[in-house]
Length: 318
Image (tube, rainbow, N blue to C red; front, side, top):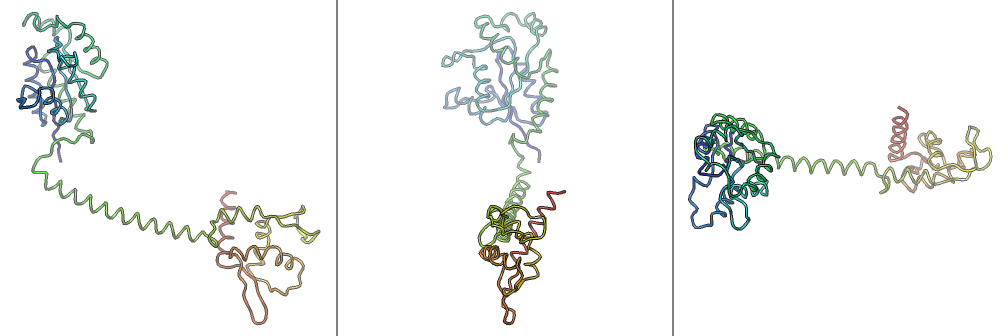
């Protein structure tokens, strides 16, 4: 839906009547809404409060700067035009300025006389003009330049999604429909979020071992050292100690098949008394009765833990 922006037009008045009229026409022809103090009565509020209200309710602030500084506001010591420009900035309104060029001002003086120039507050005018020139602005020589500058600037502001604007009554029905669609999408999004949280919780629990996370258990087994008796292993294990993690990995095949408690094999007996109790505590190994024998083998958690270790090792080698 097309939004209509309310544009507050600020300028001195008597010297820029034609320019302001051209600006109002340009804003209207661009499909937007002009606003300025000469279009409204002040009502019961003070003039400044009324100006604030209209700037607050406008989407864009536009300044037309000629050769005059304007009537001074006794409270701030600034002209009303200068004060409006500063107030629009404090409100966070996007501002654009159209400034008369020097040649056009000279021609205006020849045509209208010295009243179109600032004489009483010239320093304040120059300071204000310097401030305006320090921002992005456009220059005009005649009415056509003003209209073109407004068309170009408003086209850019129309693209700004942060500007609310006004919506035609014909579009209100569609607006309500979109609002309802957004509400439905929001509810669906919240439902999906809850499902994701439930799935994440399930995944987290699936990677827990007797209440401990995979990382916690891995760290513990890696830090748990087991003393090695001399030449119990025939492979390349060296040193007097081995971590429970490394011993678990080396004996994973034994636990996967399972071994009987009464096995007289020396390595199996060592593993049974030094490693198996640790693994039983974390539920990685389970004790089963097979006939009259007792068998120890990997539990479901143990298989899952070994598989995760192997995948981590594989990914680190890639």
